[in-house]
Image (cartoon, rainbow, N blue to C red; front, side, top):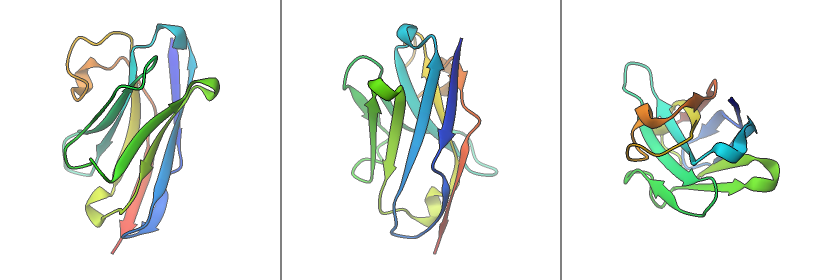
Length: 125
């Protein structure tokens, strides 16, 4: 089993920055990758970014490229999502998820085996 705990969400003004953290525990040696997704009220879950657990390979949603950066600190078993130039449209609950194997593309939430409880990001205009 793998457990994920997100932190770092909060209220920020448009144009500001936040760094989300996802701390992973349990059978981390079996992981393939970790992704960030977000979901706003009334909207579908949306892929943000993903990173492989044992390499620096990353993937981003096109709309996030240049503003968001995913990174990983294996010594701390933590994956980060640095979010810059935040917009009101970025307001959502942000979730990290982990996958044991990659059977689908990293932007497909159905390919992830474990999920955190989410952290709320609110961007004021």
